[in-house]
Image 1 (tube, one colour):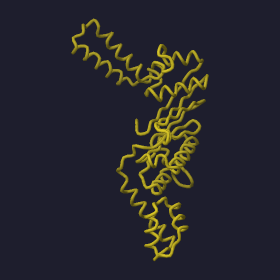
Image 2 (spheres, helix red, strand yellow; image 1 turned 90 degrees about the vertical axis):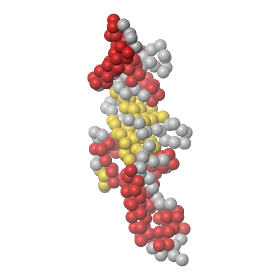
Image 3 (cartoon, rainbow, N blue to C red; image 1 turned 60 degrees about the horizontal axis):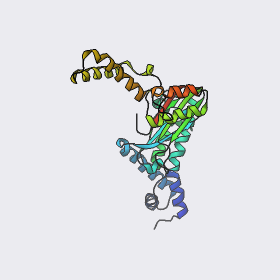
Image 4 (cartoon, rainbow, N blue to C red; image 1 turned 30 degrees about the vertical axis):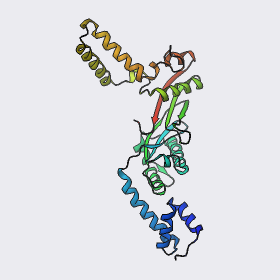
Length: 270
């Protein structure tokens, strides 16, 4: 029988993040030699990462630091609530707030702990035994308010909202809660791409024709369709969840607050 102790097993598990049985097998195969077992587990872990390359990362969390939020993805909610995964996400978002990358792809090439962000993530993937992927990264300038939402009490935040503003912090936070619940895509109607508006107009017009609506009503129907889109997907035009007789714009104005930007990340959702 190989000569190793439970202290050796514990040390090797902490170094590699491997399971108990994998560690014991590696030590037995290495006749109790720690360094040989460590190398074998690292090789096994690297191979497993390759096998995991095509797996789906539909779980994960949203982390925040300063003026930045970040999405880190994994395969299961078991890993999403793992302390090492949560710590990795916080380390990454703190670094992202320092470098303010253009996007996730750019951030992967940023320096972290003497290597790259991409390599740090790959190393943690080996330890945790799951595919881990960097999702989106976003930052805002100026004063920001943050709202983080957990979908379950035992899981980390799966929705994160960052709001830049001038005025009242609580009013800005309430706007963030609105964005979390109502999923707006744009801050103002001016940000809605022209091709999307044209599509809404075309659908409204063709629908009106199919339904036999009189031609004199077409313009008003099309206008109504576009305005309905704005109410659904433009934050400032949405009906406030605080007062359904007012828009978010009106509620913010009454609080002497202007929202100048927002970022909404939800795990696994574009």
